[in-house]
Image (cartoon, rainbow, N blue to C red; front, side):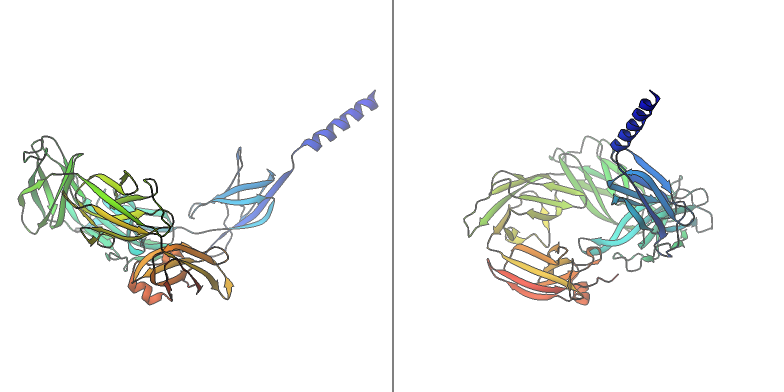
Amino acid sequence: MRTLAALLIIAATAFAQSTDPKTCSIDGAITNSVTHAPVPRAQVEISLPDRLRTTQSDAGGKWRVKDLPCGAVSISVSRIGYIDKAGVPLEAPTQDLRIELTPQVVLAGRVIDDEGDPIQNAHVSLLTSGLLEGRRTILSNAGAGTNDLGEYRFSGLSAGRYILCASATTNTGRLYSEQCLPGTAEDGADALQATAGYEGRIDFTLSPLPVYRISGTVEGAPFDGTPFDGTLMVQAGRFATQSRRDGTFVFPALPAGHYKLSTETERGSAETAIVITNADVEGVRMRLEPRVNVSGIVRALSIASKTIGPRDYDAFIWAGATSVGSSNESGEAFTISNVAPGLYRFSFKLPKGFYLKSATVAGHDIIAPGLAVSAGMSPIEITISDDGGAIEGDVTADDAPTDAWIYLERDGQPVRNSQADAKGHFHFDAVPPGDYKVYAWDDNSKVEYASPAWMQRYGKPVALSVSPSQSTHVKLVRQIAPE
């Protein structure tokens, strides 16, 4: 009996071992991307379908996780003082995995007044010099308030170009001038170039500003000339005030400068420009104008006798954060409804195989200069065509195929951009007939493609012509975009 029992135990153990799932391990090392030194005590997280496994790197930056299910997993690594690296896919088992963490950028300093006293609750804006639609500009990144010592600190930043701006308004309404360091250039030419691991100190000294009173009235609703019977928020740059129910409003303390006063309701909007020099401005009048329905006509010129329907295209306009899309009644007509009067950018999403031949209002182009929306305006007239050609090409670097960003330019204006595949091949279809320049760049985030001067200075394009319904082939050598 004992022999039989022993045999049964051995058999049960062998069966249990045979049904255990196979396990795998992952190990590696964490290093500093700048110094290449080991990073100790880095937090390593491995995401599994049903749970999270964690460990820390040792003094030599090494780590290991055992008893993992074999197959695809995701790893994230973090450490105070470094930029997090998250969601790195890999397969278990993996040995000697090398992961680099990039040291953070830290910008800190102090804000004081003209007498050397700290300013508490001063606002410090962190601005980044970056590219927006191919143009270098200043982009808002973050903001922070100062403590009772006038101190601020931004941490966890990536390498980049930065400008800091400080401003303050005290509890007593005292206003201080805004100061931006190291510069105020709109294109970021004076921005601080911070490399990985940079720790910099920027201190501000703010001077008090003289302020002036601005008062006025919002009129026009319900668009019969009577005062507005309600309250409205009136904006003047970063300042705002609430109107009274009779439409009158007051800005008690605005510094000198140029302002656009604006307000809007569900039914209408109003704006006017004022200039403050060295005196109060009284009696400003703002008239609410009704919102506008912008109509549009689409004319499709098709060599293949194609027709388009209301779902085949979209028209939309935008100004800043405001964007309004179209409601398409048919393949030939659309309406952009409830638009506040003003200047907008215009875009048109094309049906497959077509290109935009023209977009006009009363015979005037609206693509480059923009669309001025006003009451009684003429319809937008869109002409599209499918007689475009094609551009096909291949990109190399060091005589080998490579991926790249491809930019198409016509008459100094950007037309399209796309990415070549890993084999360096790219394709543009529905290209309007005409003469073009084609560029290949390594990094899309560094290319100022909307700046003709930048493209002319740094670019090495290939010129080509596109004929109706014909394909053109081009060979490009990838360029390295400058920092």
